[in-house]
Image 1: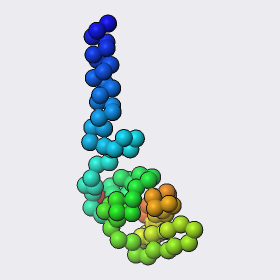
Image 2: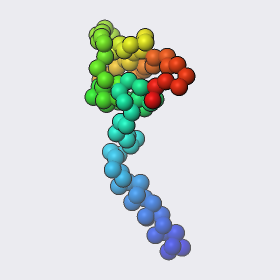
Image 3: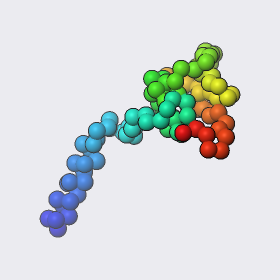
Image 4: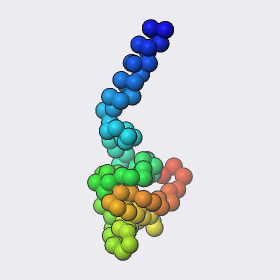
Length: 100
């Protein structure tokens, strides 16, 4: 019984310590891919900030502001932000073997 209590307390401490991340937020690893490569596009996650997206994809070729902010990239690719967070995106088409 005591062993279960200790194990439970240890698990709880690990869960709430954050282990290097904010409470309630998924842990994000720093970008490792070259900006704009397939690997970079695959690292996108809803809720990312503009800075995180720019670090992965590089600067957009055009920015549009309407009901949402839309960044355009080569290859008919785009990302859309709502309430200052990444909401949806369309990656460019990569040929087989291309993209990092």
